[in-house]
Image 1 (cartoon, rainbow, N blue to C red):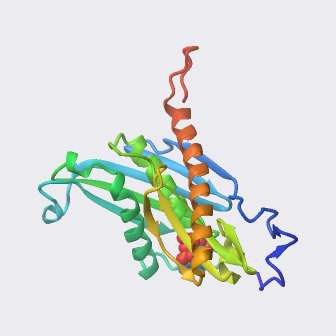
Image 2 (tube, rainbow, N blue to C red):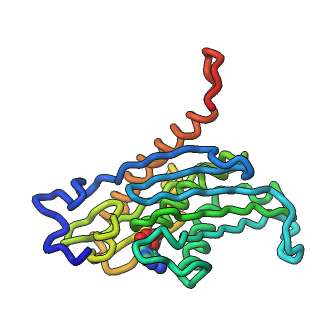
Length: 243
Ligand code: ADP
């Protein structure tokens, strides 16, 4: 889409959201039979799937750690996930996203429980509309829980940014393309930040206000994540299964 004249009009964004509103979220835990844990996550028009394998043997062997598990995270965008076909395979961006996403999750995983083993996280982006790294982290966090990996807490992620001189939560593609700043954040429900990146420019005050908006967004997401886990794992008293 060509640059719109305005991204916000009378306090409402082009997709009808208020500045502090997240896009609609849909979550389904346990969607892949072969993975130890999995999750499908929709974040507006983003559609991602996360699969977790492990703890399992490390190959190649020399990568193993004697006192903890190694966590590996592979983020991949399907070639059909974006408007113009994306060239398949890893590139600089996917390597960066994989690294920061792994670092966003490692602090909550009890890696020391599984020496000499690997926990492999795969995130496949099926449809992209800005915010795929945050959608991937939200999905991966649930896939880890679904795999029964002991964790201190879940991790939730969303971005905050600036468009038309206004701070906005959870940028969509046009806002990301034509906005002034984009700041993805991941955190635990008790406010420990595990990912913070910034593209563009925010003043000190905007940064503080934006971080507060991101925190509220992450807490909202955390509630939906918990509900999605309960949907799969809560025991029903009427004897019916949740499947
Ligand atoms: P994120 O998806 O985490 O917001 P970026 O800010 O790097 O990550 O990307 C923003 C959006 O730009 C992506 O969600 C996707 O819609 C689009 N995009 C990223 N890489 C490509 C690519 N190689 N080809 C086309 N679109 C892309």
